[in-house]
Length: 212
Image 1 (cartoon, rainbow, N blue to C red):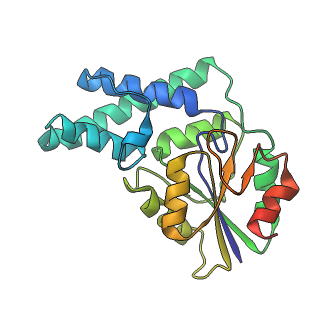
Image 2: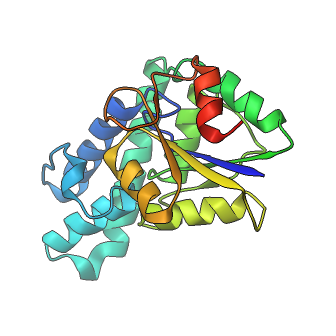
């Protein structure tokens, strides 16, 4: 049995750009501070992880629960507004590739995203990637990407896998995969890795990296 996990923003959906802008704007709305788009400077590159670090840096830990709720509400609202006015595209071939994997009896699939679940589901739906059978773990579950991936692994439903592969597009995806001993496949050209695909129209290459 092969486990295949997917990040979402930039990996399955062309949402990295507007997602970043909505997140920055939501933090500015609530906290009045501007944060840069270089997520690599944060310890945990997830919505809840970045926000927690911003809150700590401002010395507002005692009010973190309220702030987190308000930022999340603003962010989800901004993503919804963007989606209502703009087309959101899947990474080419993503739906077809997922369909192939879901149909295989020797593959378990799950989403493991650093985004909050509410916005992640909206972006997947807007891009036409609708698979109710695929479980998800997200930043709504934990601030750590490795913990999110472990949770997605458990939610995929098996206790043992012959291989575990994570498709992602950021260095944090690559680092988390290395930490967990996952096989990592990069999508697009944001980073370089030994195993990479431009998109999911490279079906045979992607399947080969999984071991199929």
